[in-house]
Length: 355
Ligand SMILES: [Zn+2]
Image (cartoon, rainbow, N blue to C red; front, side, top):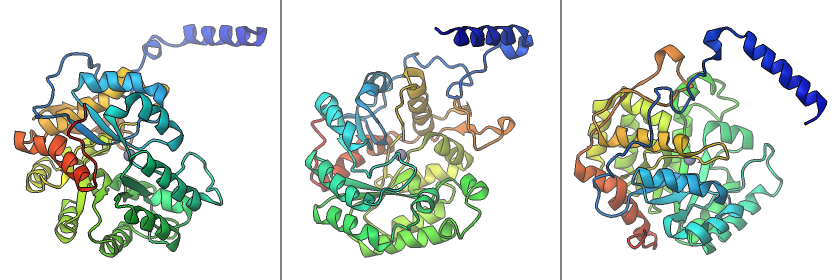
């Protein structure tokens, strides 16, 4: 340790001892503001066959130990993950019996590389060779603005055609939380229009590629508007929805609990469970567990109470109350297992033997 470090440490120590008593008490972490013990036993979901998390981001092999520790505790066996190609190979080798990969573009750079679209095509091919049969297109308003292109831009066409030519399914992220539209996406010129424009764009693509199995991520990106989602499902028979994104679903599904429950029961053959869990170097058992805990409470139980996870989209004194859907067993069987297995079988992937 250098002398400068020691000096800084001393200063910090001094500052800490000078802080008033109340500030010295550690604030609870955002993933556990209610002080839950996430290691308490929870019975596994009442499902025959392995439970599948159809939308998640296990980003690196070094995160897998904590990831599967938490997953095992919460009875979730198989994962359909969006992982960078560079990490997918190691994960495939060590955890391939529990994973299926969704082909994704290179991400992580703030700037768009000049050959980003060609690179995307090469990655789709690489993922296909690893067994992937789904391609993800991220077209949230912020993503479109930073890329400077809508998803129906001709530049995306070769990637769609590569995917469809290989018999792959599509997953899209269209839309975003209404709280973000209200707070961030207020300039339609910058974000390629309004939410309605973004959904018109999506519908034109669904129309153009009719017959291709398609997953609308995060309840089609609009759990706030179940009427819009019903209209999409009614019009496009090959469209499925995943119910991933923990804070978003906790907030918006709970806010319209009874209507959401009716929606899930009505569309029980078209909804697939996903967590949108994202691994990270600083995300260990408790963080990962908090996401699984919330999803299981939200879909399986009639829990009414605070969410352990802080929702930064709402002020601290207006945090959402979680209201569980207590979905019937037959619906849970479908969203946790039967639907993902059926979706994958449809694109030539046998998942039954997994686990
Ligand atoms: Zn995601």
